View 1 (cartoon, helix red, strand yellow):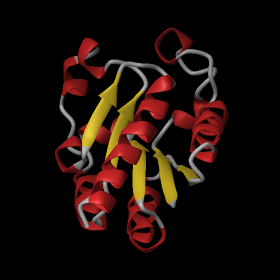
View 2: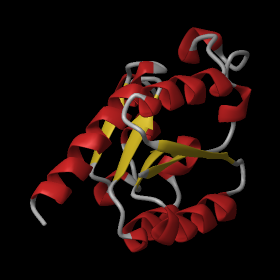
View 3: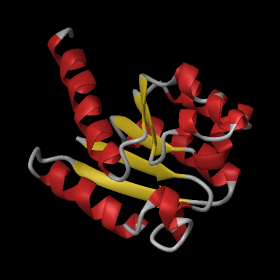
View 4: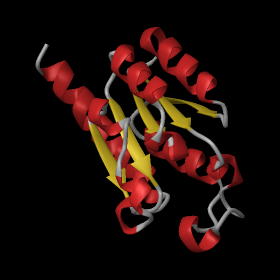
Length: 149
């Protein structure tokens, strides 16, 4: 089994970017923790971070034939990207949207997600641990699909 962990703009700056909101854990640290959790279940993790919307769209298109599910933090694209919404819907895979901060405790424009409606679910506000929660949720979704075949 293979899971794509997809991260959007500015997340490569984690660890130093607004630590009062995002903490001091780096994106590499987050990805390593997901890989460690996945290894316990024999799952391969593929990771991509890009500040470029088109790269994220392309990764979702490629994932259709190479992955079983997606953990995605669209970051700022969450609130403005119809292209990502359409790519998530088109990929045909279960996608769990994750946000490090609780977007609903922040500025009003962050309260609306264009991407969440086509995702299996959304996890927000649990810091880096949200990625582990997203992985576990995705495993439950995928195991339910296997059982129901």
